[in-house]
Amino acid sequence: MQGNVLLVVTLFCLGVQGGDYFDCGRQGQDCANGQACQADGNCDCKTPYSGHDCILQDDDKSAAPCTSITDSCGSDGGLCYKKGGDKACYCPPASVGAQCELKRYDVQCLASSMKIKLLPAGTFSGVVYVNGQRDVAGCKTTETSASGYLELDLQDSACGGMISDTNTGARSRAVIVQYNSKYVTNLDTKVTVTCRNEAGTVEVTQTFSSENSNGNIHEQNINSSVDIDSSAVEFEIKQKDGTPVSSSTAVSLDDQLTFEFVGGNSCRFQSYPHKQGPVDVKYELVGDLTQCKEKCESDSNCTALNFNQAGYMALCAIYTRVIVNLTDIYLNHYTKECLQDDAIRVESCTASNGQSGDDQETLKLIDHSCPSSEAGKLMEESPTKVTNTTVTFKLHPFKFNKVNAITVTCTVKVCPTGTAAQCDALDCSGQTRRKRRSAEISDVTIRKTFIILDPNLELTRTHDSSKESSVSVDDITTPIVAGVAMVIILLLVISIVVLLVVKKRRTNRKSQEDGVNKQKI
Image (cartoon, rainbow, N blue to C red):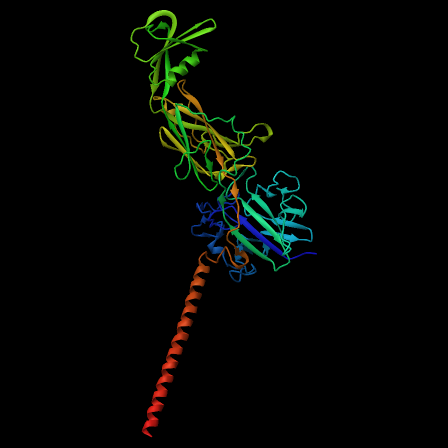
């Protein structure tokens, strides 16, 4: 026996004004006709375009064969517009159907099961699943049914998470609408579906907060992803308030991350074969020439070195003064030359969850110096060359499906003085040709790791979406009508008060006149 239905929709979003069902910040929900997406998730529709996604043209609204602005489009905010030679309905985000007669999120309740039907706005390429059961067969779906909906036909005993209220007989469970199958963001949707024997309503709530970092960091195992620093490039990731992130930093999904790369000092070694400097320094045992150079690079006072490979023994001498005279010998001498303010270009950046094998998850952020298609709308500001030595980009935080850790590994091209042109920014439309690489140019690998806070979704504020409309006739009609109605009501109240006052005064005056007439008689 089919019961009445209560569908409660809870969103991850904090203060989202772009609508409960549409947010142009999500993957697949775009502003049409080249219109801009605002930070609050609303499309900035310029004349002659309107609607939540700017797809309507003003001249087509209520045009013939429409007989009115709402002709055959229901009572929930659907608008009639001309489409070719016919009329069609432009539905508010919460409704679908030829006449906006269907709910975008709906459920069919049976005695011991429920069929959840979801039709996310735009082009959906993500996954829908029972909360906490993303990888369990039968508890998720990515395929649309013949009706066009994503459907989960669930027995009460399946997939766990079913909550029953013995007092009211209500049964409810939570379903996640994840708009990109590779990661979670604060714009994904949590739908709490409740069936009970009451009048059917649809309540929509929205909130997002992050749990205390002491209670949600788990399954990290990020020891293999140690941060990598470089003297040639300073790499820092900052939160919206300017706080730098580190491996112990927990980032909220509703934050914003700024990646900053600054060219530092790069050092080269000029080789003088079969030469050596003064012998008044102490030699140290090293593994090879590379280790000897690393010792000199890490010492800001080092100016030069002697190196000798004798069989299995390698000797390294570090100088901390300028060497003027060299003598002939079987050793090799190297002088250190450090260049200031190297030009840079970020070649690539890849995020991973720090895992390996089947548990590894990766997402390419920058590819060939341009935003990767994998990053999509996560890239809130493309790589920008602030100065010749500084590059930044801004990223919307996200969480991989399996763990909270995110490790970002970047490759940065370093161009010393005289080769800076080879680190010029690339035209990401593909028009700029890459220049031939100079031998002096090097690639530097750097890495940072941080933690993403798990979202804590909670129901804090409700409203009946069946009583409101997300689309108005001209985007401002509803508030104007409401304002006019309030003014009319106020005027009516004032008029009634004035009439009562006037009537009372007339009554009092008549009483006084009757009293005077009686005295005269």
